[in-house]
Image (cartoon, rainbow, N blue to C red; front, side, top):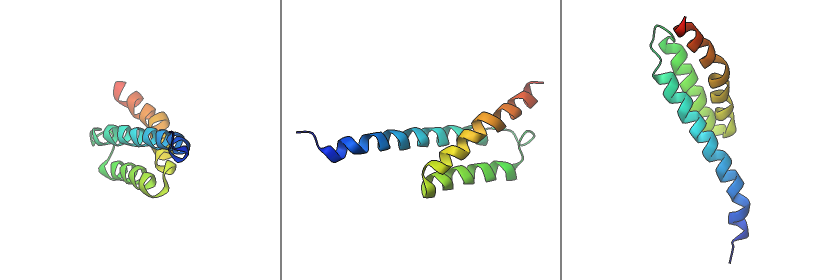
Length: 82
Protein backbone atom coordinates (compact mmCIF):
# COMPACT_ATOMS: atom_id res chain seq x y z
CA UNK A 1 0.00 0.00 0.00
CA UNK A 2 1.26 3.49 -0.88
CA UNK A 3 1.58 6.00 1.93
CA UNK A 4 -0.19 9.21 0.84
CA UNK A 5 2.00 11.43 3.03
CA UNK A 6 5.14 10.03 1.37
CA UNK A 7 3.73 10.64 -2.09
CA UNK A 8 2.82 14.22 -1.21
CA UNK A 9 6.24 14.89 0.34
CA UNK A 10 8.18 13.57 -2.67
CA UNK A 11 8.08 16.81 -4.75
CA UNK A 12 9.29 18.78 -1.73
CA UNK A 13 12.11 16.32 -1.18
CA UNK A 14 13.17 16.61 -4.82
CA UNK A 15 13.05 20.42 -4.65
CA UNK A 16 15.17 20.61 -1.50
CA UNK A 17 17.63 18.04 -2.82
CA UNK A 18 18.06 20.03 -6.03
CA UNK A 19 18.49 23.26 -4.06
CA UNK A 20 21.11 21.58 -1.84
CA UNK A 21 23.06 20.41 -4.90
CA UNK A 22 22.90 23.94 -6.31
CA UNK A 23 24.23 25.44 -3.06
CA UNK A 24 27.05 22.88 -2.86
CA UNK A 25 28.02 23.57 -6.48
CA UNK A 26 28.15 27.31 -5.82
CA UNK A 27 30.11 26.92 -2.57
CA UNK A 28 32.70 24.67 -4.23
CA UNK A 29 33.04 27.10 -7.14
CA UNK A 30 33.44 30.06 -4.80
CA UNK A 31 35.96 28.28 -2.61
CA UNK A 32 38.21 27.32 -5.51
CA UNK A 33 38.47 30.88 -6.87
CA UNK A 34 41.92 32.42 -6.33
CA UNK A 35 42.07 35.44 -4.07
CA UNK A 36 43.39 37.52 -6.95
CA UNK A 37 40.01 37.13 -8.66
CA UNK A 38 37.75 37.16 -5.61
CA UNK A 39 38.94 38.53 -2.25
CA UNK A 40 38.47 36.38 0.85
CA UNK A 41 35.87 38.70 2.34
CA UNK A 42 33.67 38.39 -0.75
CA UNK A 43 34.18 34.62 -0.78
CA UNK A 44 33.12 34.41 2.84
CA UNK A 45 30.07 36.58 2.23
CA UNK A 46 28.88 34.45 -0.70
CA UNK A 47 29.51 31.16 1.11
CA UNK A 48 27.89 32.25 4.36
CA UNK A 49 24.85 33.75 2.65
CA UNK A 50 24.32 30.63 0.55
CA UNK A 51 24.75 28.11 3.36
CA UNK A 52 22.92 30.06 6.07
CA UNK A 53 20.17 30.92 3.61
CA UNK A 54 19.72 27.26 2.76
CA UNK A 55 19.78 25.99 6.34
CA UNK A 56 17.51 28.61 7.85
CA UNK A 57 15.34 29.78 5.00
CA UNK A 58 15.35 26.81 2.61
CA UNK A 59 15.17 28.00 -0.94
CA UNK A 60 16.58 31.46 -0.20
CA UNK A 61 20.08 29.97 -0.11
CA UNK A 62 19.44 28.30 -3.45
CA UNK A 63 18.32 31.65 -4.84
CA UNK A 64 21.54 33.28 -3.64
CA UNK A 65 23.57 30.42 -5.13
CA UNK A 66 21.68 30.68 -8.42
CA UNK A 67 22.35 34.43 -8.57
CA UNK A 68 26.05 33.76 -8.00
CA UNK A 69 26.19 31.06 -10.67
CA UNK A 70 24.26 33.03 -13.27
CA UNK A 71 25.55 36.57 -12.79
CA UNK A 72 28.69 36.80 -10.70
CA UNK A 73 30.36 33.62 -11.92
CA UNK A 74 29.97 34.71 -15.54
CA UNK A 75 31.63 38.03 -14.80
CA UNK A 76 34.47 36.32 -12.95
CA UNK A 77 34.98 33.81 -15.76
CA UNK A 78 35.02 36.60 -18.34
CA UNK A 79 37.57 38.48 -16.25
CA UNK A 80 39.93 35.48 -15.93
CA UNK A 81 39.76 34.43 -19.60
CA UNK A 82 40.69 37.86 -20.99
